[in-house]
Amino acid sequence: MRFTVPKFIDHEAKIVGPLTFKQFAFIGTAVFIGFILYFTVSFSIFIISCLVLGGGSAALAFLKIESKPLPAFLGNLLLFRLSPKIYIWRKTKKRLKILKREKFEKEKDKEDVSLKMTREGKLKKLNF
Image 1 (cartoon, rainbow, N blue to C red):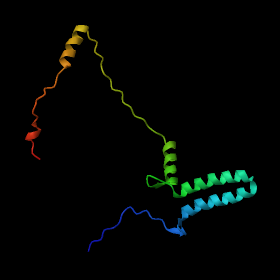
Image 2 (tube, rainbow, N blue to C red; image 1 turned 135 degrees about the horizontal axis):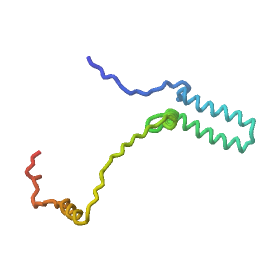
Image 3 (cartoon, rainbow, N blue to C red; image 1 turned 30 degrees about the vertical axis):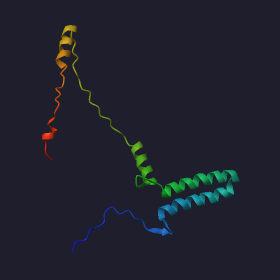
Image 4 (spheres, one colour; image 1 turned 30 degrees about the horizontal axis):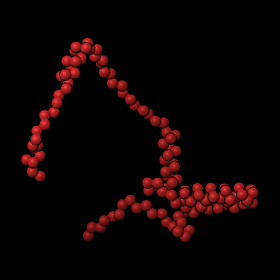
């Protein structure tokens, strides 16, 4: 008996409740930094920094861009920006024609080819 094997399964084990280890690490790090900031800075700076840290850690933990997690997307973006790039451009040389006015008008008339239009096309004869 043949069985179909599922492919492209991206499933990480849930370690802490509904969170994977990476998600827990991002959220836990933000909570730890917020805990330290609570005792070291003023309350207004603490609130602002907690909002920024919370938003950043939630984005790193849960946000996906084109089905890739945000840390992987940022890593790929950084590698692309820092890697050397090679731009290849081939210049094609075209000879310029210098024509007198009479010759130019003659060549212009030669290039002007009008299309022949018929009332009945041949599409009706085609059978699909």
